[in-house]
Image (cartoon, rainbow, N blue to C red):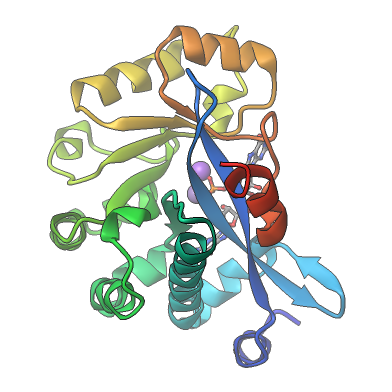
Length: 250
Ligand code: G
Ligand code: G
Ligand code: MN
Ligand code: NA
């Protein structure tokens, strides 16, 4: 039952966990970051966020769940520092309802401070659509986060309705090309080319999402896309597996 009460119990009983998907430098293959993706472990099964994030947003319980994701990411960063003397940034997804909540910015700052995490190691991913809900307020919040040093990525770029005139006022650091445009590659490359050009003009890092095959990778490499993510490299992995594959070997 994906109800507010069951999500509340899941938080209380510590039933959420994070999987991590690597982001790789497409020129060198080096690990440059990862995305944290929540799962709900219930009765021995993993439940996808697609089946509970919408309810969490409608009921408002996304705020404490999102806070748990950020705090858990801080703990993992701390663990990597201690255990491996190594760290790459962790990107967390911030839902629209969570971004609108007044507690978001103070929460992130407070959690990073409490866990002594350098803000550069935390990146928030916000969809274009969430940003455009209230563009003035979004700019204000992102300014606060960016000036504190946190990374800010626009997720699923190209699928929303960003106003290009506002884009240059958004204090973002990264644009993530939505995977629907990557899946069109190499045959249909108009949108991917345009996003890459735009990102270059605005001096942003570009991440291609959803890379699934060699042909897509080749095209992206040849068109100076800096960073990539997708099943071709790796599915999102449980923490220990991610560490073994990408952190411990460094
Ligand atoms: O891993 P997949 O991993 O199946 O994620 C499905 C969807 O759920 C994606 O749109 C992803 O952005 C979203 N999602 C995954 N983890 C989180 C999270 O921690 N918070 C929010 N708000 N969305 C998440
Ligand atoms: O919405 P967001 O971009 O945060 O969602 C991340 C989602 O994309 C997760 O569900 C993740 O499992 C999924 N994902 C990551 N890489 C790939 C890929 O190569 N192909 C597909 N179809 N999904 C992917
Ligand atoms: Mn994302
Ligand atoms: Na995305």
